[in-house]
Length: 298
Image (cartoon, rainbow, N blue to C red; front, side):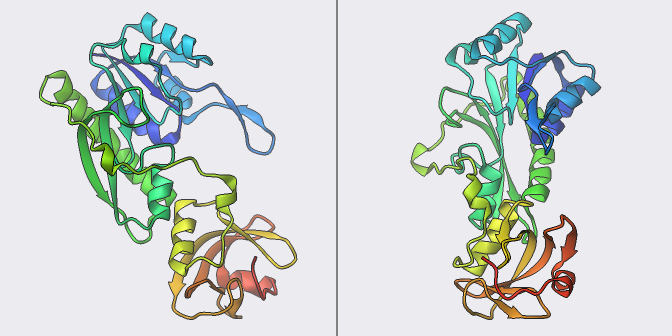
């Protein structure tokens, strides 16, 4: 079977490697290089780096029409999409005889959309998973081919859960494709009444609101790792990497203890265990308090 792979982020890399080991990947489509980091230097996607390392034919179309032209030229039996970041047109969806198949990091129809891993962690979920589905014109609305549940550990954050789901998802994708090509799977329509959504993260969501409950603060820190932040009273910014929930209460944002970096929330409090200080150094909460006088966060 000839496969065209579409992907962009690091989440897609294990799937690309697994497909190369099991099928004939005739081309890889990824998004154009984008400015990144402080210098805003054009940076290739993780999928581009891996495709070049594997010696695969690489394409970076800008326009929808160029995506269609590329797929038509490659004549794949199937298009596989993992974290590509663009919605495919009806024309592209209709090209491959075995359809366009997507690996999505949630148990659809729950958490349709761009940020399923972040949103499920922020919601305090205990269980998530991967879905392999047949794509249609909607956003993650296509028929399901196969699903696999993955438990969320108490200390999982965006990084650890993404790695777990991407590794397990690659294996699920390969086994599903093999059975799909052999006619062993009957697609199952989603129950649209049960659908929930995972929209992109807004930049305002990275700032911690201390009026929220301690558990909500912890789930936000986990789900948006490593980018949640708060301000010291003088206006300096810190990034909060890891917290634990404590039972003591106080005025939201105030430090409850001077030796432990324990901050009151709207309900209970959190102890900040790890953070990045205003100088950009990763430190423990206790070490941070040895160098900074903190009475309140905002």
